[in-house]
Length: 244
Image 1 (tube, rainbow, N blue to C red):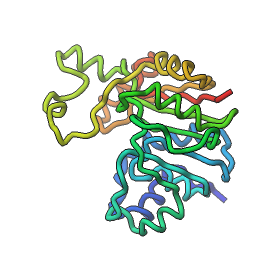
Image 2 (image 1 turned 120 degrees about the vertical axis):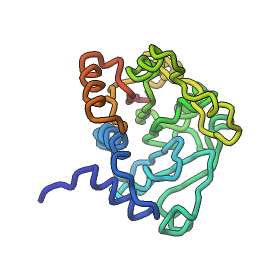
Image 3 (image 1 turned 180 degrees about the horizontal axis):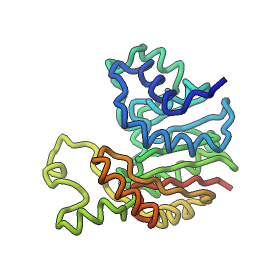
């Protein structure tokens, strides 16, 4: 029997749980992240934490795959109107706790989790070292920590800077009081590895991710060609670490 591609499973899971249909194209980053995360042969009964879980889409996908011990925390609460199932049903599938972990300790005991992952979250944190230290505390010895984030020195940002623009975005977004998700700081892979080593998380595997956003195809091909020759200019990167 032919195995169903991960991309199709992501879309199927989203459309099963969420009222708004999945937007094709958005799954590209997630497919890459999940491919690397799941390559670690994580047992289906492992305790898994999504740090900065948002609307639970990643955790619900893991549940769809058969992972039954999933946890998520985020400073934002859940919007019941987004889902096809009730909040009670959600809570039966995913253990969610609202918590501003950028300001407060993680609400879990020491050495509780087998796996912790965080997709594109750390760049929004004011206290990244504190959050990494807390992640280390609640991760068991030998546990897996996987993080992804935007690359501070990627090709697109360098081009924007050469054009005389600020790669951090428009000033009006920064001045908008209603804008909640502002990037605080982006990192190079070397810097992120340094942060992780400070809290005794030992990097064991790294990967750069090429640009896959909704650029024109010709421009995207140029970006990917340059990124293939100079990986340190790639759009994002991921690091897999072990707590020893």
